[in-house]
Length: 232
Image 1 (cartoon, helix red, strand yellow):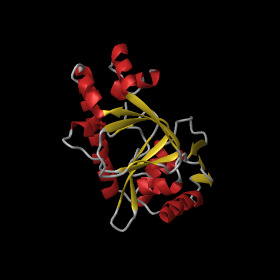
Image 2 (cartoon, one colour):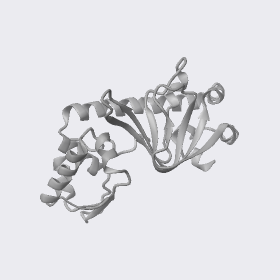
Image 3 (cartoon, helix red, strand yellow):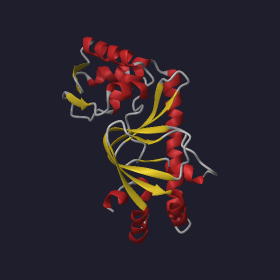
Image 4 (tube, one colour):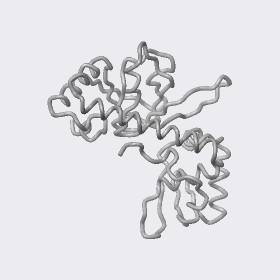
């Protein structure tokens, strides 16, 4: 129940309401590459990630994959669809690595919302933040170069350590990150190589040492694209 209490969507619920949410939830375990739902199927449940990552994506007519979002532990997704008539999932979702989820039945949660004004406002605030996040992402994709997007993503992963060398571990496959940043995998790799040649970073597999945070920030046209959480 503490995991729910720390999640933005459920933070205003009292103990009795949290017990109701737990009672309506179902635990789901997925292995790497397992599909949770496919675009176009009936959206009668929403989800919260406990462990691992869920990739939300769409396929183009030529079969290319565009990653829309990576949901990480503590994040909920697909909850806004409960307010639509005959909703269907607009994206597909698969597991990135081993994943544990909780799923919640829409109608049962709507019944709980009818008795919790605070939670209704909390949900509205969550959807508003997601909207602002998507608007910013449209700006990033439209106005930034590929180099700026990759640099901005890396900068969003940095933690200030008084100018010391900082380490980033990419816990998502580089191909998935490239799609999330709307660059081709080979472009993503070339940009990392260029940053290495410029002395900004050092790459070893999934580990990236940031040698020059300030230099990397100069490359970033906007910090935070797809790397930062949208939750407060």
